[in-house]
Image 1: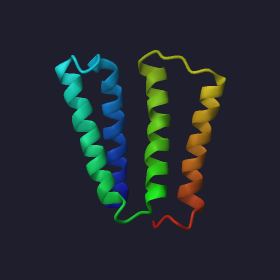
Image 2: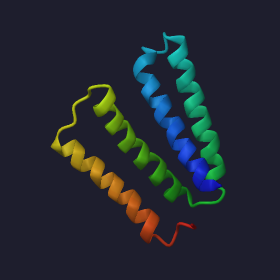
Image 3: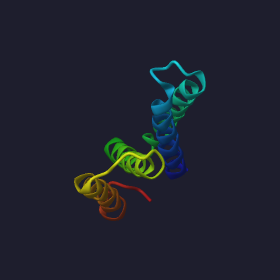
Image 4: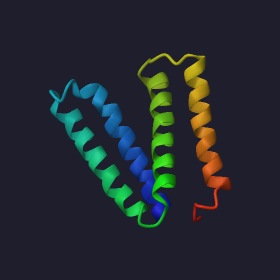
Length: 109
């Protein structure tokens, strides 16, 4: 169940972060509510996940996947440019998450 919570926490954080773009300094009510709800849900679920998985592993996966998803979504749907260095960085982040998941003995599957 902790892995499901982690996945939902990542998606909630990504939704909240995307909504930041549209909240215009918290002057737009609907995006502002998405930000607050998204981050609130993400942190609530993270608090459950860290009871089972190591904190460092949880945070590495949550932040790494979140960064990669925001970069990709920003590029594909918001029209934000990613240069070669950004794409390489995102690929390295994804590789790091894969290494943690498949090779770390700290992660209980």
